[in-house]
Image (cartoon, rainbow, N blue to C red; front, top):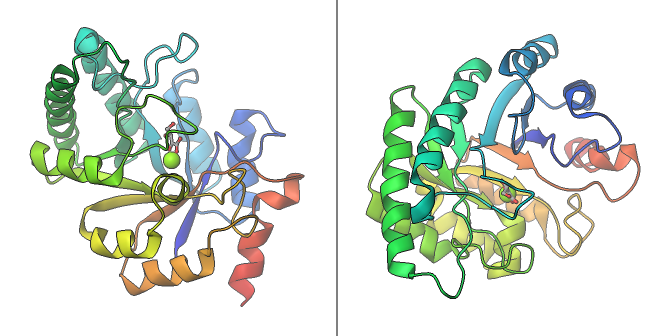
Length: 260
Ligand SMILES: O=C(O)C(=O)[C@@H](O)CO
Ligand SMILES: [Mg+2]
């Protein structure tokens, strides 16, 4: 049975962020993940983890200026200094939270951009991030995001992510397989998990349409959880969804599913 981590950026929206650790523990989660921890002191978040006996499974590098439209820096040639600073800051938080996984967002591409230059920058930046992360035993992840939710995102398909991972050539660079995005990009869920299980370093879930909890849409999650078990996946499965309604919908499906 997969081990689930609550994504505190999306789950428990009725509670302030730092109270969501308690909500996750109350609902039976042993781990949490979130997007960006940087507006809270790392020590405060570390206290929340230990207070509730939770493991930090994953978080993201700083994405640049989200309000101004940044969605990551890694492919942007003109943002090199900021990217390197973002790696160091994320690794500092990772040490404080004892977190071994960091998601590096690629960034957006515009029509006028020189794609070759973005590609070269992305590969160099991922090597740098992976090498700095390796020094503290951490893994760096790349995640294809679907073009409906994230138009213009540089890394928009699983084959592109696999090519990048191969070219970067670092053992601690892995694929973040977000099943919700994979469904909206391409489908072929079970076969993609099976074909690439060796490079999958983290899994995330949500159903579609709506990006809500499993059981609210078209994805057969019981089948995919059994597939992950058969493949021997023993990492975390991040619950990165917006509960469809009310506090109980955040994790009620998980309790029902575990009873069977
Ligand atoms: O949107 C997702 O899916 C993520 O996992 C984020 O880390 C990137 O926005
Ligand atoms: Mg995701």
